[in-house]
Length: 220
Ligand code: HEM
Image (cartoon, rainbow, N blue to C red; front, side, top):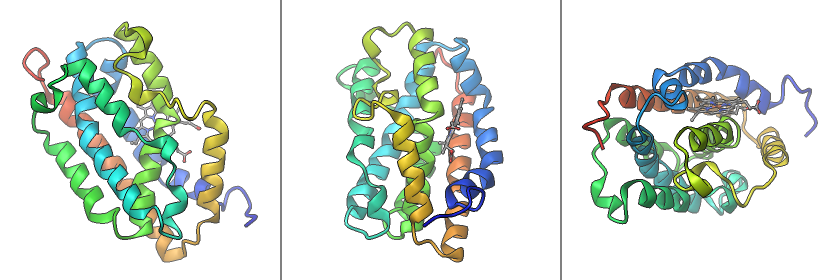
């Protein structure tokens, strides 16, 4: 479907959530992390929190694979759970699964994905878009910065931020945005997507806020 650029749903969605993105981006924790002010345990704690989130999201992708609308967004190249597990093994050691503490913010985010991303294409797409398009945008810059800040040789600990199966993010993102513009979401569906994307940003901001409150010499 050919649409004027400003009415294309990808552009509407980006504009409608720009304020929420700005709020997430300006979290003190992220600034401190990228500015090299925090020990590596603070970075590890973010990776630990992303693991249950992506486990839920990627289980939803499996459940939605054959769905006529949601299934179009499922791309195996995006899969992050194996990379997160590789990073956790580096950051926490082989027994990482027993060493991760409880995170109410990660639990809330994961529960939200489990509540809305397995049933409706709008719910699935909203969470899929918010994470993966972000990972392929700012996430790539964040990964390169963290690699330098924590002096991580050969990408150890930052596999999550590297999409080995997507060597050229720009054409991938362009194709993803074309899928957004072609998706048959009606006005009600679009409103649902916008509202859930905003909720996803809030859940991410809450995750950063939780990380910002931890004391690093004690926290795992
Ligand atoms: C320090 C934190 C962050 C930085 C520096 C950052 C940076 C960026 C940048 C530079 C872009 C623009 C790329 C472009 O125009 O193609 C972008 C896009 C995006 N970011 Fe972030 N971001 C951050 C945090 C987040 C978070 C926490 C999320 C949500 C989980 C997120 C989700 C997105 C999404 C979905 C897009 C694509 C918007 C669109 O084009 O539709 N970002 N980010």
